[in-house]
Picture: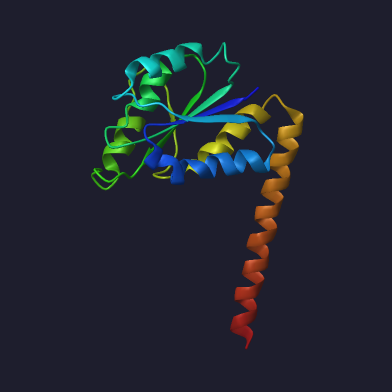
Length: 165
């Protein structure tokens, strides 16, 4: 049973959204990924959002470009946490239309919003939400953070060593 749903408005969003899936794979967190368009398949979006809890999802990651109504509309139809990923699409206004469509939600309909094309951060945030009540995921996140720290310290040493020469 998938704990996280990863949805996107179009299959053209897959190259961006796959980084959320890859992070969840690294932590062995189950997910289901599909296309749900707020504009081209509104009935599918309603059905998905209204049945998300029954489907046992705990977090929804929703990526969309352009007008980017998918995350907000899904959030309006469920009480599950929704993480929005604004995507710079081919018809985008440099990504700002997507960012603002997801970020500027009205009171009562929150959507956590990550950076433009920031699907990996959406995967990390989903893991943190799950990790708040799952000790195994929390341990994996701690290891991930330690690994990042070690990588940065190694890079810092390498940079510092080049200045000595």
